[in-house]
Image (cartoon, rainbow, N blue to C red):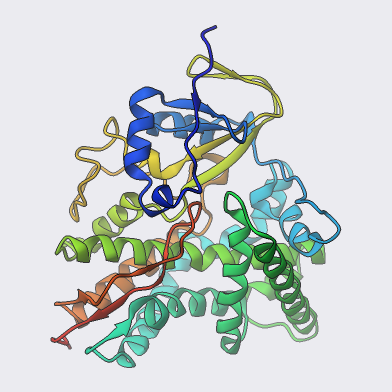
Length: 389
């Protein structure tokens, strides 16, 4: 067997965080799979290789408690019991009770409410200048997923703050401050969900927390499911919206006639989730490399979505791109449960924004979150001199 390709790419380097795609292209020209020298994790740089990793059942999500485990128990508890961190049969047992709430029929019934919320948020904006992330892209999906679950709207600010603190732990090298903020957020988030769960058991309502309270899931598993859905249920929408909007405005683009195609291109062009890690549960040979049981491999989704073998002119933002097999939502057993909801929210929010503000333009330089694994913007200021109906 040939020697294993290696890479020294620093995923936390400021220049890589700012724009990883040229670095991915350089790596892809040398190898589609390589062992990361610093971490020992294998990284994929091609669409086909990432897809193989995502679909290979011998590459599983195996949760390992973060250390120091005792101090990080509030964070570990949420992830230990999440569907995303488990393989079948546990994954199936944890996913099944929530899956029906995210089927296409139910999501379509939510569309009028999403349109109503988007319109109300747009009514509050000053066309002369507003932060499209803080004032529009963030609150909309948080309000939608909170309503679906049954979390009072008054907690919208808390949910966003807690979510951002927790997901920063997924970055390459979280600091002690990031860890401390994640511990506090996980504890506060779980406490709120436990309180709501107790209330719903005494007074059922038409929401997902009530539905989950009536299942065989333990309290820890219900709490983990609700936190995961609240986090994942808006993080993708917010960051896809911001990344795609900035890419379009910098290029003088606006949505095509089929907004859904433009949304798919937003998902592909600057992926909100860049890295999804798996662990080999048995020896697996991939691209001529033997990944041994217990070794980790990460599909680089952003690299996959810019692979010229899978996409024509991959570095061009094509609002009307028809052939778009991106992997922004993953693939295989861990394909994103909330993909139909995220797609619907994005189609409605993108379409409504441009309908109301057809000459939208950037004001100043957007403020990046400065993170690699979850790419996004903290602030994107825009203005519009023309307001539509």
